[in-house]
Length: 241
Image 1 (tube, rainbow, N blue to C red):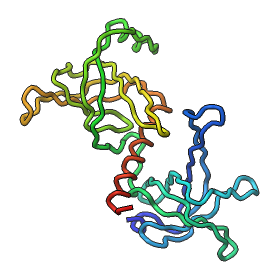
Image 2 (image 1 turned 90 degrees about the vertical axis):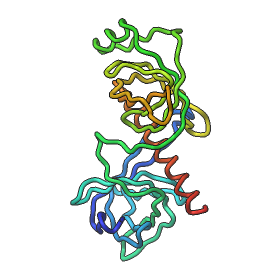
Image 3 (image 1 turned 45 degrees about the vertical axis):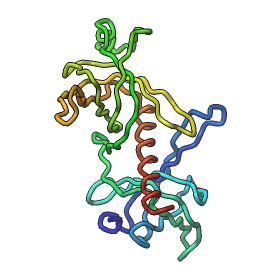
Image 4 (image 1 turned 180 degrees about the horizontal axis):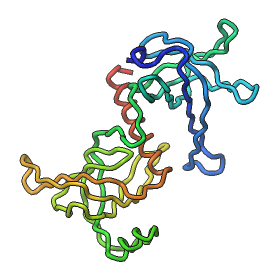
């Protein structure tokens, strides 16, 4: 699939994630501009070593990065590791190996990961809805929450099942945890219920689709990265690594 869409000379971005020195849970993203040199195989490619001003950026071997390819067919994204660095034909080269599938990248659409994550939620109170309409984030603390299970997740929303049904178009308070950097991080998000349906094969169970409302960019990026990392783990298991 790589050679079908990506060609030598295509502009690309390499994005790395660095942990802030004084805050292990904080993440900042650095982006380097470069170009594709050659497609070695369907999961390996050579890229020009990026530069800042006149200085080469020696990205570490075995480190993982986000790659974004700007092609005639659109923007494509994947994860990849640096597996070697060398000089060839007077160019400094990074040899990179894909660790996830190449996928078309559209900022308004998000890849969905099948999962089974516990979630707590409740409908928003009237004053909370009014606060959101006024671009505030007032949340009433201490109200009882109902349990449910997220069955797929994306950077744009969730699909979850529960033994109760919310009203379509209602706003709900959602709380769940994702594994980030070796420990669990709690996410508290406001979502809009897009649809609700009874599951024919599971009496008394309702499937909900919900879209995040006013989600922070940092939270969205972390959720997307969690999804890609989980997919990469699955891919490694399938290869027996």
